Amino acid sequence: MATGTPSATAQAQEKAGSTTFDSFTMKNTNLNEGPGVKLNDQQKIIVSSVLDLFEGNPTQKHLDLWKDDAVFADPLSVAEGRDRFAAQWYGLASLFSPIAIQSHRVISGGNPIEVELTNKYVVASKVPLAKGKEQLISSRVLIHVDEADGLKITRVEDRWDDKLPDGAVSQVGDLLPLPALLRDLARTGVAWGWWAFMNASWWRPFLAFRKLNGMTVPAFVTVPKTHDKDMEMKAARENSS
Image 1 (cartoon, rainbow, N blue to C red):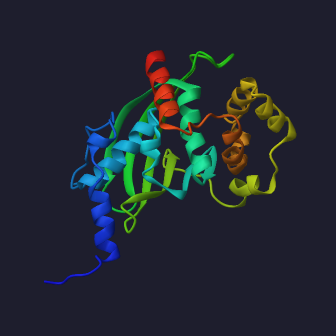
Image 2 (image 1 turned 45 degrees about the horizontal axis):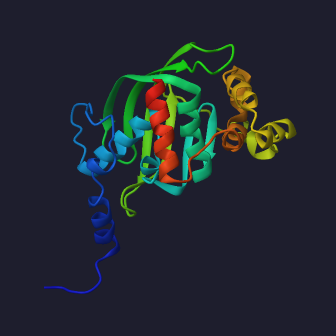
């Protein structure tokens, strides 16, 4: 029998195998697999965790399944790196309440995993002027994973109507600094700047500033740094829903 240090692949499989549904308290565990699709246990954990995020239920344990340099992209934002993609998910949960998945179906168990998703977002009551506004979005979600690192998420694309802007216009945010006004609002902790910024993001011409959105959102969103704060925020979301 061979002995010695396990291979990198074996170590990754062992690492992935130590993650279970029981360690997450996930909400979306009843997955709808399309014809010919059969997810393995680790893929189910990945998909369930992403559906939880889309339904406004982020926790640090969910985000532990993401690599530090992972990317989240949708028609409004490109968020690269843990600080930015974490802010997107916690910001979503803060801006919209409730969020309700209307339907989902896993249509591919490859890499990326592909999910057809229809979600209803209701603007939270604390958002001035827009509270109660509903938005139904149908999209194809692509979940890319690093199979050599315990099946960690490297990129999630939320392709509304299976479309995602590309090219120079979607990269314009790389060339722009964080506006001074938004910086000042962030320093003083004024939430109005965040709400105004996010509401403006729904204006169609603003889609060109996707990467700017990804860079500025973390300035206005509270991302918990401790487990206790994470659970406190989770409880507050559940009590308000």
